[in-house]
Image (cartoon, rainbow, N blue to C red; front, side, top):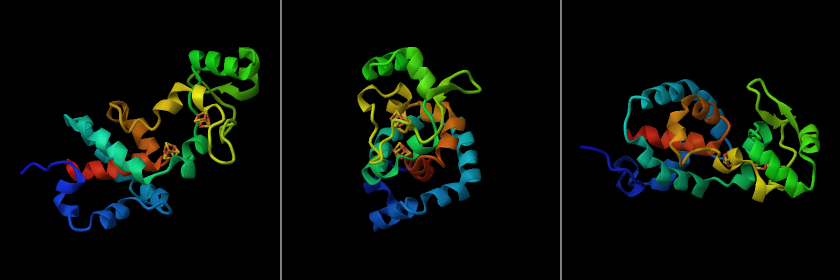
Length: 182
Ligand code: SF4
Ligand code: SF4
């Protein structure tokens, strides 16, 4: 019988849904859990290349993940990796900050090995002590889209998703839940 996606129809977890979901994601231990499951998750993402229709699960899983995970308590992406600052990002942000583009680049950015502008060092200089983004309204497109848990990019770029599985708890969570439905 085909499994129906959705917590209420998820037979295995029906009886004690919250207990089972908390076994998947624990705010304190998710990173160690994700490190332990790296090999398993790599193999799973390789398998998804041959599967069709998995994207349809993402919107629900994305919402479910972010109903449990608070970005303002985490900010792990802003603390450990950098978005790309593409030309429109640089134009928009430097204008918003009242800086010349060249000054903005010189102050905050460096070119990485792929030729993309990224922050000079992590944490991101625009991350506040309260984990709020100081340029939220004009933040780079990559920041808006991260961690791609509600987009086809999740499966289109399995290597990136794999890397993100140990950076972002929501990615780890969505992967764990996906493994239950395929
Ligand atoms: S790593 Fe994921 S959960 Fe944490 S702040 Fe970034 S997007 Fe949110
Ligand atoms: S620009 Fe804002 S959202 Fe993007 S990495 Fe920096 S602090 Fe985080």
